[in-house]
Amino acid sequence: MRCRLDWTDAILDVQREYVAMELGSEYLRIAVKEDPTILWRDPRAELVDKASDNLQETYLVRLYAVFENGLRNFWINSIRGTEPPMRQLLDAVSSRRKIPFHLSENAHSVRIFRNAIVHENSEKSEVIDIREARSHLCTFFARLPSNW
Image (cartoon, rainbow, N blue to C red; front, side):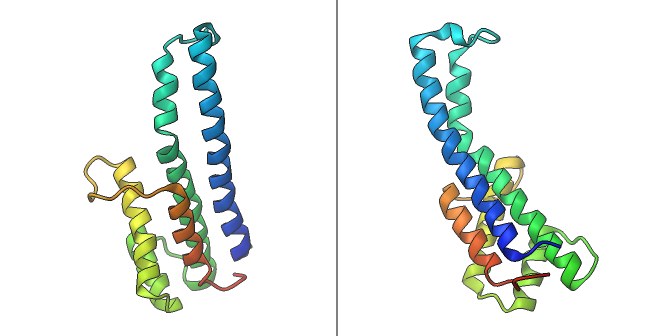
């Protein structure tokens, strides 16, 4: 059984990986401009730019996946052994834990943005920075019990 701190640390670790890769992608962009042959397998420099441009969205999907996994773990181990859709799960946990509406809405905003990244026909969403997303999701987790 994992505790709340394990899950918030795991979310923070994803953000830290993103920061490391963001820095690394800048170094790679510079290196490819100086010597395009370092991309010997596929020498298209625009792929480096595209990967770098999509980095935040890629890591936001991972960040949300950790949150979802942790929330489902809490639900199954503390509430009941069902697997509701995430919208319903967020609402049910918010209700049972008396999580303030604005904190629940912040977590939903990350869910909606993640869905906009992953699914073509999802709700429209404003872009959420990975740091803001991490803050919203960890703040939601802070309202859960320490252990479950």
